Image 1 (cartoon, helix red, strand yellow):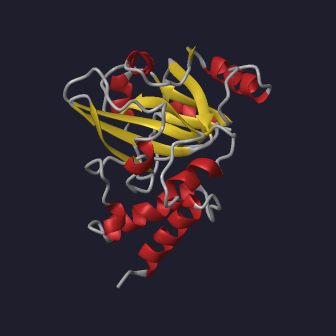
Image 2 (cartoon, one colour; image 1 turned 180 degrees about the horizontal axis):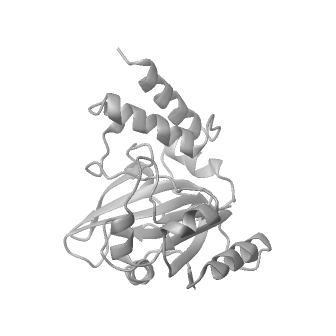
Image 3 (tube, rainbow, N blue to C red; image 1 turned 90 degrees about the horizontal axis):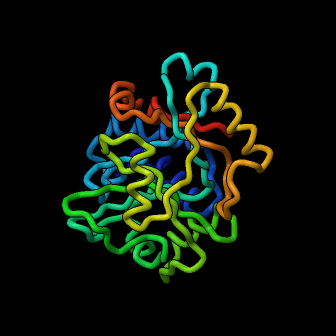
Length: 243
């Protein structure tokens, strides 16, 4: 019989997939962390990608975050859609899953912006955002729950090669080379440049692009630094969302 915590997680996930979230990403991730601690083998925690999780981004104040990280940083748009991970094995797309761990292959294989194959041997896991061409956050969520699958009206932007030991800017270039619509980025060396990027986004002057954005993301570019900083149960310490 499902526990109250598991029911709460499942209900919140279904509300999110309907495009009517009942809590913030941070609150949902805190619930998942509680479920992981108390019921580590619960089916809700099983992911098609072999346990790889899509953590939410921290959104603490920049002044509180900066003393713990060092530049340079890559600054990318924060796209308002549905987080999606793609797993390739020996060049072929073999799995796709959402932030809650639900299989998304039924939609991923139909989205024109998601390559069915990449020119790479071995394993590759790509994190990105499924977004609606109409600018609505509810559009990808609706597509993922629709009984008749379709990729119409959907785009995908790749943000990261998960587990990579390369600099983040290098990852983005590699993703573009492999055929993904990779997120554009600005390189920020000092904190004032991060703030300038945020202000430019607020004024609509940072990127001329079609995707719906609800902020910018600053990520430590250096892979060794990201490894040292690590992650919490809900978010990476090396990345920050500025809305």
